[in-house]
Image 1 (spheres, protein in one colour):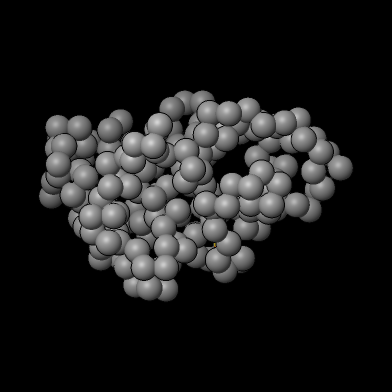
Image 2: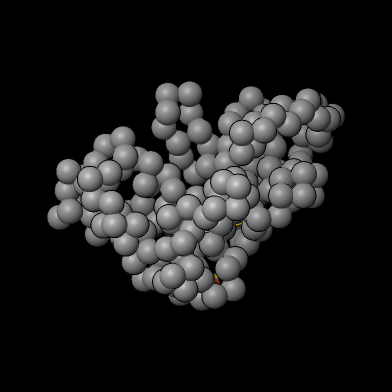
Length: 171
Ligand code: FES
Ligand code: FES
């Protein structure tokens, strides 16, 4: 047993005793009951289990949780799908996913949502041109697998959020 402390969706958890072999996915789902983070391939291939890791420099990135020990997140700040809506108000990206009916079974949705959110925040820090947008969305969502093949709708949802507020995301 080793102790783990981390911040999830703005709330500090720990110190909690965990086994060294406990994965972050099991920690979130089984220990904390945060079941919005899914378990798909279990082999770091589909990214349905990805959460957002926030850096101290204001940047963020996603990271799979299925094969990574919970202890490797010690001291980190992360966000899961449970942390997006504020007081029940969905984010623009969540609404976009719903409007486009971007998901069917929804298993891949938390990973896509986290990745899309990271992408939007990156564009806020560093806007890009409209001409570069389509390629940038493809690259941002690359690696996330959807067995229900919702790729186009996820892409459209992210694009619509950006085009609805171009001054925020585009040069
Ligand atoms: S479940 Fe983690 S990458 Fe597929
Ligand atoms: S909506 Fe079913 S896997 Fe993507």
